[in-house]
Length: 128
Length: 345
Image (cartoon, rainbow over all chains, first blue to last red; front, side, top):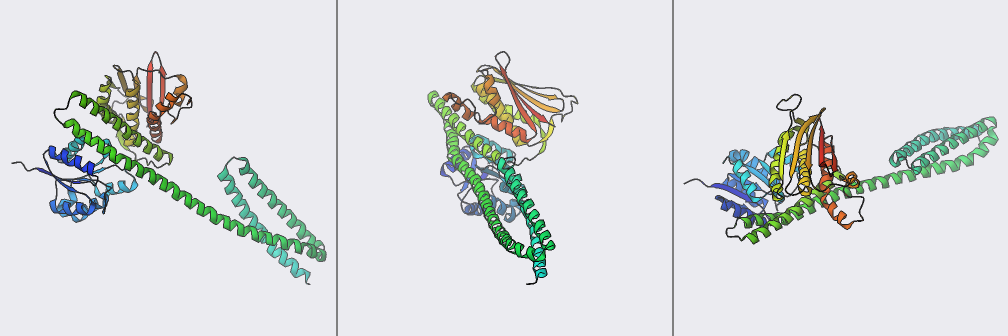
């Protein structure tokens, strides 16, 4: 049996995470979900998923802080973990700084991508 | 009373104070002039300051001469006048310092206000985008449902189109705000314009197909014909957005069932992209205002409503100008409408 691709979705808006979870389940992913920054970091370090979809504007810890912690505290996995920033914020200087430092694989603006495009980008990241 | 001492005191305090005071006043007057520019008051105030200073020096010379010619009468007349002048000078210095402090506080308040206004707009854009993304993705899922009747599918597509329009307008408003506040940082990198153009065309082709329009693209040979002939140092995002807006405009305003022709070519040392379509001819009067945010002829209600969609052209030209280029447009019944984006190397 093929090992299922594992994705951690970090998103606090209910409509958005419902849509994302359904789409990725429809595409044969094993999906876990975190609703805030603290939960995100806990799950990421515990599960070490194949890829993380990370919203920037989330409660408790921001997406940028989560990304930093993954890189710094995630050991071998964390250093090269695949992270896609999925946000509705235009990249400002602070965000760009974080992007250069912690190198997510993609930066996508939610309102400008279709669900199928997100899946395509994820598969692209995973080399599928 | 020792007149010599009195005279020495007056001259010893008066002259240094006059010299330093005049330097200070001229400095402030010059700052005021540069800030207010060529306005009448901008010239009047420094002129007034200069006149006052010249008068003060003249009186100073007169008083000094007087006190040397006739020390007794000189000192007796000059002392009270000097006393008054001294008090006025001190008062003016104190007022000036106080105004300075208030101006500084006001400046800081304005800077903070503008910053929070920018933040406000960014936050509002983010807040608006969230439910719109929700609609977009939920519609994506709806379209994947099996057994959708043709009628339902069509309506879902229409909701999707309207939703995408809202999303685009928010994006445009955000871009315009950033442009107006000079918040756009230009990140230059080696950009292959041919790649950007073909990618953009690929993205917009489905949109054109809905109008039964086809996009044809010709990449002309260059003088050198090197593989990187169309590579230039530019901000990829800005150039891409500008090209996208111009082509989208051609799709939206071009005649259905017709061809949009795009050409990439070199002219002198510039890289040019031309986007041509047949359709509504743009009247001469509107051509002049094509790239403005609002048309000048706002009497027509329909015209005003159209302008809201015209933000894209304003943004396209602003972005192209940020990368040292420009956009021009011609339109006629016979030759159709032609937009030309020109990028300087």
